[in-house]
Length: 128
Figure 1: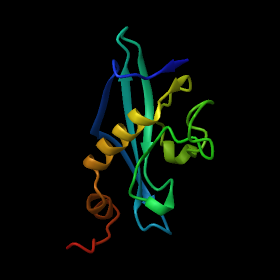
Figure 2: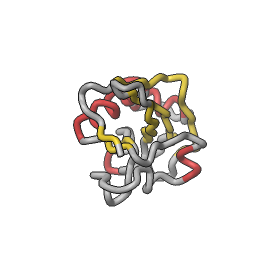
Figure 3: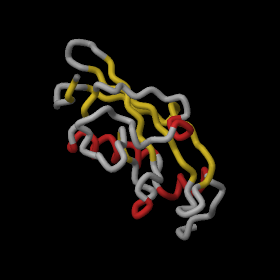
Figure 4: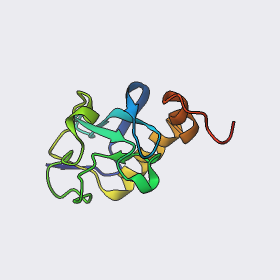
């Protein structure tokens, strides 16, 4: 079991993304981003960030979402359906505290802001 702290490094890129169909309620395509973090010892752990998991804020990304157990004391990735994972890997023994999850989600949202999410789904945004 590994718990991330501030000595870990993160890797998230816009190339390691899968765009799935448009969600009927949010109107946004479901975007699955694979990321990894590396411990100071060189151990690499994988995580997945996905939007459309909380429909109140559909454009926000959730990292290793664990359904109703979002604080993740248990195996990660429980609430992410297999089709949304889109073949992405999730290290089950990785616990990501709230701070790093927020940072990772913000980085994902910076890579894919709502306007870009709408464009990927073929929907015109209100800002255009």
